[in-house]
Length: 356
Ligand code: SF4
Image (cartoon, rainbow, N blue to C red):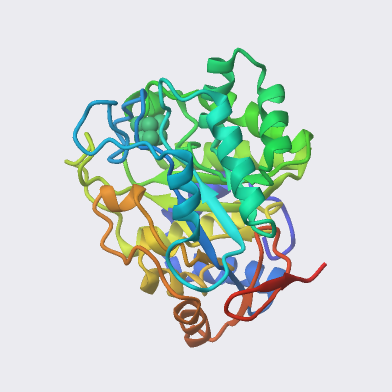
């Protein structure tokens, strides 16, 4: 790796199985510092989850509900637009929008949602809809993936988040998310998004029934697509939270597992610009430590997180900009407020400009 050689499948397995976590971390940190020095990225963002109604019933999920189940909700458009403006006073640079696969909401609802946000928040980048949601909306609207993505882009979607990738291996998907699109469809949807100029992230859900081989396979499939399109911005390993899911007999991930996953991601995904340690998932303390194990990004203010809190996350629902800066600074790194496309943000509390 230090020679710049691309790692193989077996190298990936060896990194997972090495008893010397500090050596694995040293290598990942070396690569991270070669790419970014001390710079550590964060953003001021807001999550919006328009509905938790979902037809999929994935066993990994504590968020989705049947339409008439207790706690099911769907925001009216005005409500979603109002929620975008609520929360902290600091001007957000990104809306992160994901939700359930609602059996009745048509594509037009989502197009109107995005167009209405763009109208009200002209400067804010809209990162919306996982590959799973895009595929579901396309099927419902009887459109191709490309046509659906083009409509979403025309309405104001600027990029896509990386969720729904889970683990690509069929064996695992059958257990944790049987009704979701398969790994090949996820990758094909991402390919199409990248081809029409929408960048995306990529996630991997770990710490459930997957093997080391499944994790390496997942990352190498992402690396292969990245070689082709260059459209992925950030890889985000997501620690599985079992509480309130159908897999609640499983244990939560440990700190060492979280750190190792960040490090292996940094080392295997040599063509990804950024590795994110998402503080909501692994706790702010582990996110801070991971900045020495390969991560260069800790995500953002979030403001109101629903999905992982339904699954028992004990982290705060949001953090202030100053808290993120403190976490990064105290790790001996240099905070860099980015927009979604990793450009510098210059700001006052209620306005910002992007360096281009
Ligand atoms: S993970 Fe997503 S698709 Fe699966 S049940 Fe939950 S909300 Fe629905």
